[in-house]
Image 1 (cartoon, helix red, strand yellow):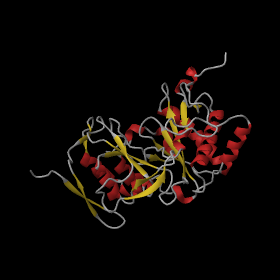
Image 2 (cartoon, rainbow, N blue to C red):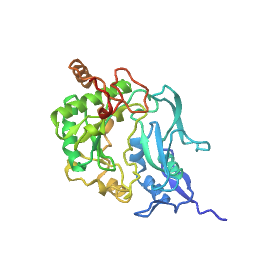
Image 3 (tube, rainbow, N blue to C red):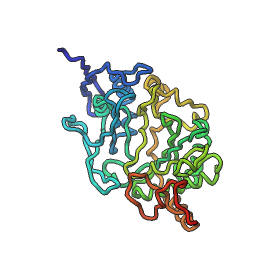
Image 4 (spheres, rainbow, N blue to C red):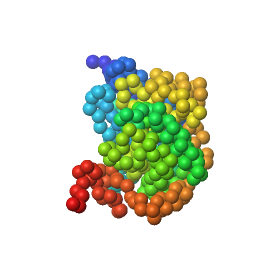
Length: 340
């Protein structure tokens, strides 16, 4: 029986490549009827800024063989049979185990990932040549139940001011869902734990300035109706959906970079696979100049030390992490045993 596969011509830095898309009519997003071929064409359309944001980094692929309503899994290292233009790099995970992780260098590699039923792309905050030292400080502003995207906006604006005080130039994107992601380029000279501590220092400062609006509380029962500043996204092998990555949500949203002066009028639902290519053509990429002036986290680490001296210690780590030095007990506060 004849195959219904389609071959896409994908431009790239080394010229055009032909990438085969099997089952092109497979529905990935049932609500808008977006197919696997539609997704591949989207990646071609946004190819250059997509690779600029997500390339040359260890990358995890969130794959949905039967569409976003079906089963999903993550893959990290290139499977057997990957084309020669897809490479890998050795990384160290929190367990201290080393393993190769996929890296993309050109749009054709991202289209190949779509052929493997990838919907969401999750890049590390470090480069392939220096995986232990992040070159991005990332902060996830996550609205909790009772709050929404509009509540994250003033938190993001104040966070930008906090980062500016320590010499960091902040960039912003929608998460693709209800939150906002704030990034700041940094010199890749500090390892992950230092960057985590810098993020915690910034988060605590933001919480001091907006105590009724934001929280750093790790346990959900303590957050209330506030925006959670998710410091644990700064850990090794913890990732966010990349810039211009689709999300596995019913309306096929995209995690979209925006300018700061767009923020207060932005509706994140307007950024989808259908609309973002034209947005890039008309307004360009707000993150194009992100790496021009990387800063340092030295001042934030001074804040971290100050807070330690004032009695604010280490924060909880993700549950899949080994027990970390100075970490408080991983016990939900309402279940903790208190001395009688």
